[in-house]
Amino acid sequence: MSGGQGTANEQERGLLDLLTLIAEGITELVGFQVAVISVARDDGWLHRLAIAGSEDARLALEGTRTPIDALGEELESADDWGLFKFVPHERTSGDFPFSWIPDLPESDEADAWHPLDLLLAPLLDAEGRLRGTLSIDMPTSGRRPDAAQRQMLEKYAEQTRRAVLTALEREHLAEQLRLAQTARDIVRRASAELDVARLLEVARHALAEGFRAHSVWLEIFARDDVSDGHLFAHGDVADVPRELLDLAERQAREAWVTQRAIPLSRDDVSYLFVPLGAGQECLGSLTLVRAQEVSDWADVECLTALDVGHDLGRAILNARVYEEERRLHAELRTVDAYKSQLIATVAHELKNPLTSVMGNLGLLETIDVVNEAGSRQLAAARRGADRMSQVIDSLLLLSALNRADRVASSERIDLVRLVGEAVELTAVMVDQRRQQIRMELPDHPVHVRGDAAELERVVVNLVSNAIKYSPDHATIVLAVSVGGDRCVVSVADQGIGISPEDQDELFSEFFRSTNPVAHTQPGTGLGLSIVRRIVDRHGGRIRVTSQLGEGSMFRVELPRETSLDQDRHAVA
Ligand code: ADP
Image (cartoon, rainbow, N blue to C red; front, side, top):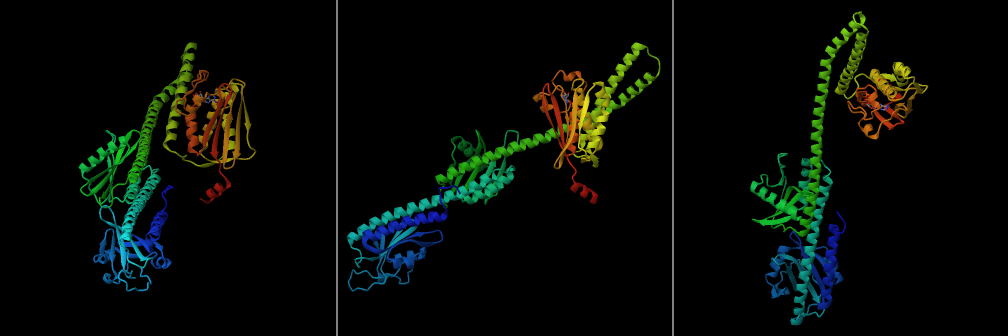
């Protein structure tokens, strides 16, 4: 509940203070020892709210109530004094439980006030409905009011009537606002829900209660060719006539433009048409329906309903964006799967003829049928075929890696050993470039779980790149370190470096740097995407830091096998 409206108890107290003030004024100004203001409630009882004057009367009457029906019967025999009705004691039923019977000495005088005399003003609203009563007792003079006093009483009765009606109206409005805002709070909290059907399920119940509506219809308009509309009904109208829905849509669209909720009464039913929208767009309609006799739509309700329309509109839009994202994501996955399939098929198809080409090249190389120029061409053909074979192998590997998110085999691997062995595979390249590899390895094993061949490939690829993209005589640093339950393999070089834009794309398939220096080296653009895929499959991650012209560092972080994991594996 937002501040400023007060709780139901605070409202009751506010009303009570006001009525007590009025009652006290009457006792003092008109000369009666007791004035009681009662309020008619929906439960069929008149509740005595304000009692002024005599302390005895207050103690006896406070918190008590009288049935509304009994009042009507009692007043049938009353003298009509205008707003006040007077029932002399001889005509009262005697057991009418409306007033307090004061302990007064009886008098023989004709106009003396009798303890059982009843003087009461029913407080009616514009429609003639009883909203409360003002009753007074024990005139200080000890006599029934004379003409002058009755005139004053008439004035105060009218003032009291107006004050009670205003106070009740205020109380009613505050209650309506409280209910509507409670509904809005519920809807707003539910608005984080991205499933529209579930959100509207919560919303329509809260709205029915908060707005005291017997029916709630929520319609999300169809989007041109994108989706069908949705209707969510709540309450006793299971089948909302199309004609009413069309009316609701028209009203909502108009209401969104003017930014207000539109109330409408028709056939004893009150409708409130509320637009659901966000930004310029009206996305749907909310229609609240209640019987006219409940009450008209108060301005505060219309305003709160409009706020609800904004909340729901935003929620619908969020859900739409989310839905769209999910659809695109699914589409991308399909395209991705298709692409992998295509690559795998093409690679397979190329592999067989290439094997034949390479076999025949091998034969030609062994027999002495070509001259010197011919053998240079043969060597060129061999280099081309080897490169093609590498590309095809990389493609086949990538498509195999893409097929499963996790590694198939899970052996226990000492990363320190694996790194040492991987480096040996790059020794020829290092020597050719007269480079050096400096190893910074812990003096104890560092265990990870996974596929040794795949992880070896990661290290070989990173080191090969460092060799390729560094100048001759450069030093490459290869390190293994441990931190908590993670371990890191890093490969650092002082080579050509990678621009920030290229770093973003580095791990995409077929990406080759935009740096022309990098293009002097042979490459497929598949190495790092394979590396990333393998690292992902091992639950790790890869990062690069690089400065163009200064060098690069690739860090592969992997989950380390702790002693706890080892125990678990031993048990399993
Ligand atoms: P390639 O077969 O082209 O080396 P990769 O996927 O291994 O394919 O690398 C992609 C691109 O990233 C390379 O073309 C190169 O431009 C850049 N790159 C990779 N490693 C380094 C490095 N250590 N230093 C500079 N650039 C690098």
